[in-house]
Length: 93
Image (cartoon, rainbow, N blue to C red; front, top):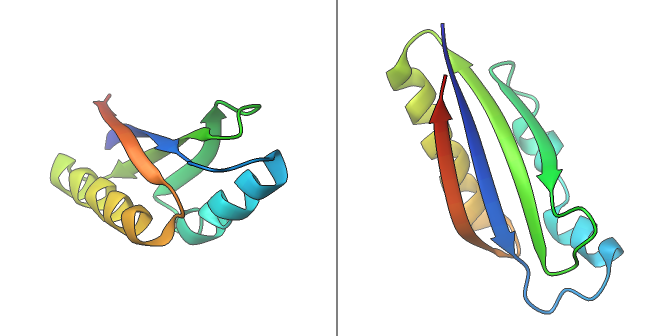
């Protein structure tokens, strides 16, 4: 069993409220949490309007499977979130 923690930091330019932030980042749990190999949560910058941090715990039978799933998550986020990924960190445990 292999495990990785993918942490993504987002910039949300022009975001003026926490409600707008939730709308722009909304659906992360629904999109990625359905996969039994992925756990997702907002892990930081909860009270800031123009930034957000999300963590994804990814498990798989091989390191290659885990790396592939992490890459898929990053690609989907780039095209679906109304914000910019400014930092992505992968930790393998």
